[in-house]
Amino acid sequence: MKNPLVFIPTYNESENVRELCAQLLQLKTNLDILFMDDNSPDGTGAVIDELARQHSNVNAVHRTGKLGVGSAHYDGIQWAYDHGYSRLITMDCDFTHPPHYILDIIQVQDADVVVGSRYMKEQSLRGWNFLRKTLTRTGHFLTKTLLGMSYDATGGFRMYCLDRLPRALFPLVGSKGYSFFFESLYVIHFNKFKIREIPISLPPRTYGHSKMTFAEVKRSVKLLFSIYMNQVFYPERFLLDSSKAVSVNPALGDPQGWEDYWKEQKLSTGGILYDGIAAFYRKFIIKRTLNYFVRKYFKKGSQILHAGCGSGQVDTDISQHVSITGLDISVNALRFYGKVNPSCSTLHGSIFSIPLPDCSVDGIYNLGVMEHFTEADISKIFAEFRRILKPDGRMIIFWPPEFGASVIFLKIVKWVLENLFRKKGIKIHPDEITRVQSKKHVTQLFQEAGFTVNRYYFGLLDFFTYSVIVADNGRPLTAAEPEALEPTV
Image (cartoon, rainbow, N blue to C red; front, side, top):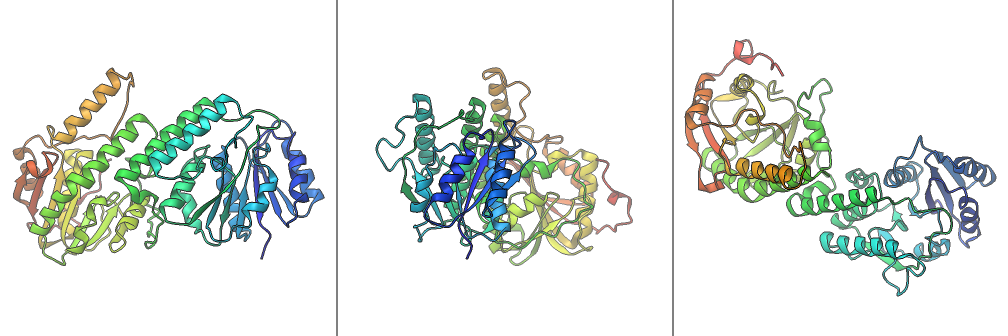
């Protein structure tokens, strides 16, 4: 078995690296060391190269610039996996993590992650200035209160047992900065891996200055609240993916940018608000409405396409009633969908050109998709839906009306942010081009596409959030007919 690997990211640490390396090598245990430098202008990179030449168990890696401490830790973890290490110890280079604590941390055998805690001893932060103490204790309070973790989640002195932690855990962490520490520990905690703590006392920084800036503090707080809202409304986002791999069509375009939408962590005020509001509506209002309509209008065991499936939070109940294939243009959305609904199939494709044979599905449904397209494009989408539907097929479309409750609420939120909080030009949801204007409006669109509207609903079941249209298929179109032309967007 390999020695434990000690990982130390550096930036302008030329005054510390030699002494830290010496103290690590003097410990009464065998260790390998990895320094990873972010192109420090003070010559740190040259020093770690010298140390690597002098000691066979010291490694030096150089990155192209100051890419963030979280990014460095992610790269260090990947390096450790790549080189077959089973235990990885991470620490700072400024002696705020005294090396002798490594002897304590490697003794812990019954944990997947071991955290050096600053809160298990009194006076553990002796010598720290008031600002540093306040920031540290505030961070601990917030992670404990909002994320339900009692651990010291904002510190970087840890041991990861990589032979017990799946590598796929760490790509779930999006932060590039200091918030990597609490986000990564939350992902590990959420997936029920065992975390233990050992008590440590931290002296003040030996040389140089802290690299924590006010901007980084602000970003970390935003991310913390973003994680909290996802924890409440969309906890599946942090779930380790055990679903089948998505079969990707590399030739498929994404003109509306849905891949980025499902990839990005929403740290802006508008993004966090929209994610929270949308998740609340999906989970507590739309889901029960969908359950009602699917069970009423689709026979048990039917082959159903969820066209534009997104995250799939709403599908968890109905997947017990019908057999669902989730279709989306975004690979990231399909990955989320697969995690939330492992019993369902996924399909990478466009609703303008669905990779399914003619007359192959019993039904289609979607929620909040049509409003993102023009009426001309909606006609093309409906033509494609008719192509793949069986002659007696049916579709259920959830389509936000101009005066729906969620539309009005989000308009009010936008007005408040722009006028009271001076957040000019804020965008809290993707563009909605075609909302339902009336029953007559959408009935005409369905009829022109060859569907018969079976039911139009707008009411209390979902608190007037969506217009729900149940439409039956007419004569199936073939791909050669004009209505099935490619989209113009």
